[in-house]
Image (cartoon, rainbow, N blue to C red; front, side):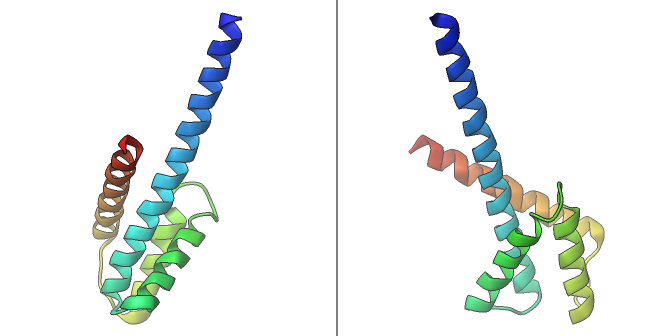
Length: 108
């Protein structure tokens, strides 16, 4: 009986961790999208819609190459200069902030 309980607890923890990881990734992409929207001169509802499009494009392939490619292309089209290093740094910041926010929410 104890083994079954332990197995269920481990499965539950795994499912929780996977869900949490997905939520952090989605929130991080949204925050990164909002940052990029600001760089593109978008505000209000336009910025929110743009950020949602960044979250959506992240579902295209594993990792963040799809997100970085989208924002880099959008910046190029609008003449916004940003190095690959800058984009990676801002994405990392957004993901760290998203993780911190989710950890606070988990404690509440």
